[in-house]
Image (tube, rainbow, N blue to C red; front, side, top):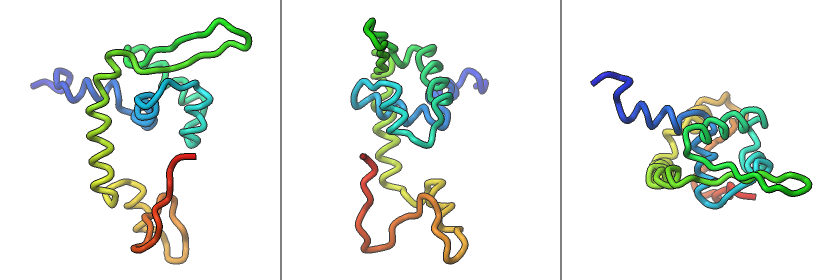
Length: 134
């Protein structure tokens, strides 16, 4: 099979990227405005979020709804095609929960110099889990 004909390649072309999976994860829960997505994903720049949302919209995975009001309001949601990605996203979440030490943050935290705190460090045994929401 040719690389370009591979279904996995096509899937990764649509949902691959640093922020697209997170955007899809948050849109799967509820429609969101761009400012809300920016608060949920503070590490992503506004420019990058806009670019990734446009690409998802171009691939017909995300819908952009403009409300004709003052001030103008734009809301993003999953399209019917985007809804079909929920099982994939759920499987990715389940895998990430089952394998936390395999994450890039886990690898970086394990190699942090002694005495320094690494971003994304795994909690020590017996410590309380940290909530990710605000």
